[in-house]
Image (tube, rainbow, N blue to C red; front, side, top):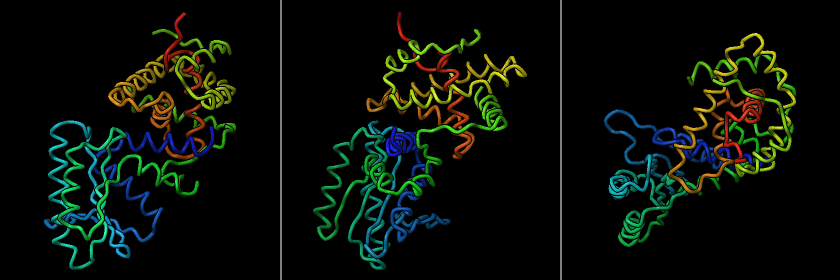
Length: 306
């Protein structure tokens, strides 16, 4: 898998899971990396943010951000339409005399489901009323595209280490910490982790996983001896961690079940993200070793029908 593809899947997972303030923070972090002139506005006291979540003064470009749980819900559609109208009018009355508004972008995390027609109609109404201002939506795909336009160093500030395809030998303490993190933050049959390549590739194909994910898992599997060392000293953890990972995997599937644009690859990266202690290379490599072990044992992802 290319580093660009890894970045695309990783940022997509982040954006899909982000709502409310976490999505606003993600958007602002990307905008600041894209254009250092972007100014994030922090809400203060009774005045709030004065209907301005961020702007680029030199361009007269203002942003208002809305990240609901489900943009397709009828109440959400009604609320977002009202918010678009009220927030822009509030912005215009409070900021236009200070910094002329030339462009207004309504940032909405539609989670790649599309902008509701009622919201589009409201934007068209504002375009006619304020003909001197350029209006636009900034949706899920806009955020992904802006992120991917950044160089890899900037991208890594958002999603952490971006692997090149190789997995270096991991440190045992990092692996142990990864296991303990999963045990402590996510709450029985013994996994069978003997690798059968034919069954392994069959499972990759059955789950529609990218061949590069197969490569990651195979390279990580070479370090499973470290896991065996840990389980020899902590025998009860083997089944316990497998059960937890299975629960995390199933919860991710349920969480994304309403979105037809979610691929198995994105589910894999969501699972990887949940297993990582932090954004470092060691944390990601340790999580990959753990996932490879339980992928082979069929605790995560679907087992092919016989």
